[in-house]
Image 1 (cartoon, rainbow, N blue to C red):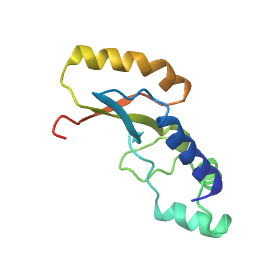
Image 2: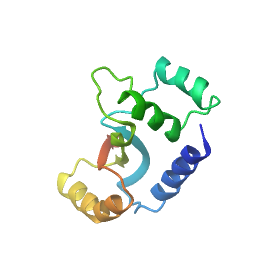
Image 3: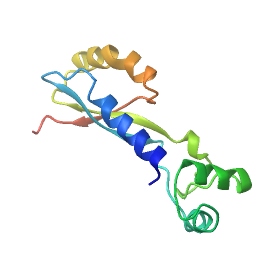
Length: 126
């Protein structure tokens, strides 16, 4: 993992701590959408041969510039920069109105932070 990727991950971790936490809702993580970017053997070889083994955004984008999208997810034709992150929100209620109000309260912050949206996980069994 290169320094830029570490910085981005750190920024995401720092950002999620700033979201409103309530009795019923908490932003707990991020997740790749439509799926996480998947590394391929072709990419690993490219990084080894052209980037001193340092896998990161620059290496991925240089391969994509040469030969097109390189995500290894079956039937994925998205470039690296088209893979986004969404917020994972733990919900400890099944009340749709309450959930809607919470999400509306954080949607502008979510957009400003560059997240694609939300994924809800059931926290009612905890």
